[in-house]
Each structure stands twice: as structure tokens, then as C-alpha cells.
Amino acid sequence: MMLKRLFSLFISVAVLMAIAGSLHAGNTPTIVGLHTKLSVENFKFDGETVEIIEFMSFSCHTCYDFERAIPVIKGNFPKKTKWKIIPIYWADHGTSKPGEAYLLAVEAGKGEAMKKALFSAQMVEKRKIDDVTVLEDIAGKIGLGSDFNKKLRSGEKAKEVQNGLDMARKYGVSETPTLIIAGNIKTDPHGMDHDLNKFMNNTLAIIASILK
Image (cartoon, rainbow, N blue to C red; front, top):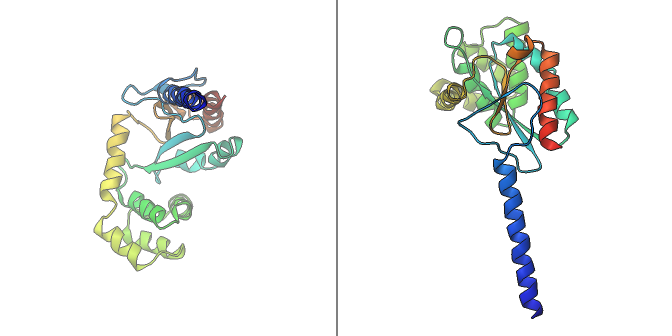
């Protein structure tokens, strides 16, 4: 009899956990802040960590300036956010190569170093980061060598960059940076007149409303 009761209790707990999980995965809480909801994706939140996808470009001055806000956003929610960068480029100015270089560096455990180096080269040093020889020089300075160079020249990450572009089109991304938060909550600086302080505060408000 005792075993039967324990088994029934176990089943009840399992059912409740499954229900709670499905609520987190599918039902969107009341979200504050300026945003739109993507109809092509579902709200995704496991109850612990908010995933943030940033569509960005290494030739984008606004993305460069927004870099200063990212540690502030992460710092407001210690261990509660997971930030993923998807590098894209606009066909009228740029190529896939800086994005490929970044993704190769991520694979080698040097993604953050490459991001900083690419932005510095583009925005501060005014170098042509679409040039493979420039990218190889940048890579060498952060400790990446011949294996990186070979993969960059062969276009190993070109398909992954293209996948990012396809995703950006699917989500209607029209400027960078654009954030996709918790699967289907989209926000960008356009509605805040490209005031990045307002954009940062808007992002903080969205995340806080999910984690509450």
C-alpha cells in the first residue's frame, strides 16, 4: 500500500513538472517595453535562463557603440542570460568574411577576443576587414594561426553566415543591432530614435518582465 501511494505521488509530481515546463515553453508572460512578437517562432523560457540572440554587423557603428551596454545588461541578471551573436552583413557594404572569421574564432574559444579585434580594426584603425589578409593578421595577434587561415580561405563558415542571413530575413531584421529575446520577442533601437541608452533600458525591462 505504501509503495502504491509513493508511486502515485511520484506520478503526480511528474505531471505537475511537465505542465509547468510546457507553460514556460509556450505561454508568454506580460512583456513590458517596446517590442514585437515573431509569429514564426514560439516563446521559449525554461524558467531559469533567458536566451538573447543579437543580429549584428562588424561594419555597424551602432553595434560597436552597443557593445558597452552588453556587460551592463548581463550584469543586471547574473547567470540568468545566455547571449548568442549572429553576424550578418548588408550586401551593399560588406562580405561574409568578417562573420566567418568571428565564427571560426568562437569555435577556437576566442570569439570575444576576435569580436573586439574586428571592431577595433574597423572602427578605430580604419582597416578593411573584408580583406582576408587583414583578417589573418588580426587572427595572428589573438593567437590563431595557419589552421584558422586555411579554414577562412576555404570558406568553411560561409554556409553558417548564410544561415544567419536567412534567419534575419525570416525574422524581418531590417537594422543592426536587433535582439531576439526568449525565442520570439524582437526589439531594435529604431523605436527609441536609436538612443542606445533607451535601447539598453528597454532590453533590461523586457528581460526583467520574463524573469519576474
